[in-house]
Image (tube, rainbow, N blue to C red):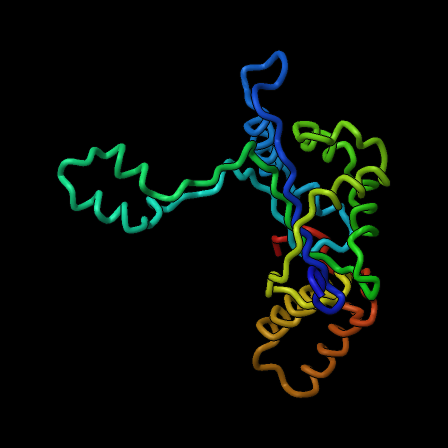
Length: 233
């Protein structure tokens, strides 16, 4: 099934960015989005850390399709290459036409826990409810976003901009985010425990381990644990 792997969902959104300059400013809509996204780097955490069940996400501007080199030509192109009488313009004219985008695109990709529903709509609803101000700030520069007024219209807009995918970020399983954060916390704390209790006598080590298990509360997924978006120990 496209987009879904177990309980995980891979969302890929390409929203067309308005051409031209932002009204009253000497900056393009694409560069305005870039500037806002760069500003997120100065914050303690990304605003996306507030969106429930986000494993990993990424934003970037796609200016155009990238042509690595001139495309391979056909027989007329080969003949033009060998002919000293042909101009460079004629040689290029014999090559296949190149496709280009009509506008830049705001690309948003996210892998998240969708549960058994296999639907992105609860996630998108949570995204709107958590950071609607940030969403408006970014997507206001995209065509069609002026129709978005609430969570329902936001979901409809994002679904129109969605591309199917079958490629997933492999650094995460398909468990709920709370379970994954707790697992990371336990791994960190157990490594610290092992380093700090080297060489203890068996009886003392057992007592220290029991105290450790009581402190970390392995069955409690919410506390103590890592926080969403945490990347510092």
